[in-house]
Structure formats: C-alpha cells, structure tokens
Image (cartoon, rainbow, N blue to C red; front, top):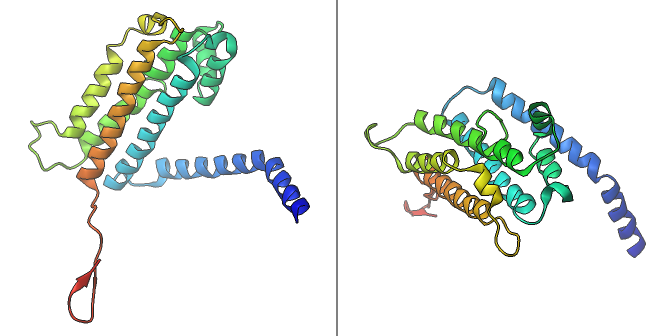
Length: 215
C-alpha cells in the first residue's frame, strides 16, 4: 500500500509541470474569450475588476518578497520578479542593461503603460468604477472612487530612487515595504467597498408548507 502511494505521489510530481501548463492554457483561453466575446455589461466590468484586484495584490506580495530585503539584483530576485510579472522582454527592450532595482520597481509598480504593473491595474479599475451605476449624485465621489484616487496618488507621487535607496540597519528597504503595505490595505478596502455596493449578501429564502420562509 505504501509503495503504491509513493508511486502515485511520484507520478503527480512528475506530471505537475504538464498539469500547470495545461491549466495556464485553459486560463489563457478563458481570458481571451472574456476579452473578445463578452459584452461590456456590468457583469463584465465586475469580472475584470476582480481580476485586476487580484493581479495588483499579487504583485505587491511579489515585490515585497523579492525586492525589499538583501541584494535582489545579485541574488536573482529581480530576474525572477520580472519573469513572474511577465515583463522580462519589456525590461530588456527598454533598458538594454543589467537589471537594476529602481528600473524594475518603476516598471512593475508605477508604469501605467505596462499591462502587468500595479499602476495599470489601478487605471483600469478606475475606468470600470466610473462606468458602474451609482445611487449618489455624480458630483459626489463614492467610497470606491475615493479609494481609487488614494491608490493613484500613492503611486503617482512616489520617488522611485528614494524608495529603493532608503534602508534600515538590517538592510530592509522600509519605504518600499510601507508603500506596499498601504497599497495592499487599500486594495482590500476597495474590494470590500465594491462588494458592499454591487453584490447582495442577503441569503435566499424558501417557502415552507405553512406559508412562512426559512433560510
């Protein structure tokens, strides 16, 4: 029995890469169908908002893990960060040099022309939110719009060189860490605000034979 379990585990490990590639192909196909075939209704906008919120939070965590401590350029963290952010070719074509922390952070955090950057996701989410229906007067910003403006301001006003150069005694880049913490917190708040505004959290009820309802 133990031998069969070991063989099955070994088979699963050997096939893991193929399985992940298959999943990636399926997700890419789904994403293509979403972008090409879905009508641009409220449902599509909310779907795309969710995708971009996840991409933003994922990127904040990647940067924190790979660029906040130590020497990521020498340790290979920046190359891995660019690879995971699907931005290696963009970086090479733009900078034509070895990877440097300020340029990588600028590309993945603040460059709103890079489809994988946090700034690009924020701009896209802002467009969707502006197009969603609201009960308030248009002259009054909704909570989602206020949070978006805060996120855009935090990114737009950042000094990349200062961000990457300030380190504490342990070598931690404290300004990057603080900024990422603020961004991640605001992204979660934005997600909650959108959920409260556009999704019903009332549990459905069903009728009983006595004419009442139960959860």
